[in-house]
Image (cartoon, rainbow, N blue to C red; front, side):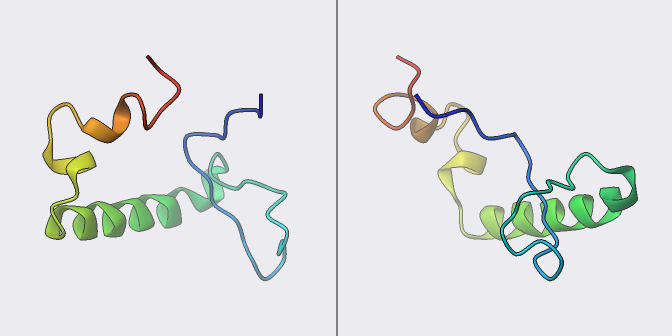
Length: 68
């Protein structure tokens, strides 16, 4: 079984094109992570993505996840 990915990921693709060093937990990048998260949630809300609009999103349960 493949290892689980971290909840959040942030990479500097100019200096780390292979996405080895996850910057999401680095306090120096907290503002960037917060800004990008806000932009993502805005788009998901505007598009009425079920992961944002449904209280119990169908994509967070089987068969879409490994939780049964």
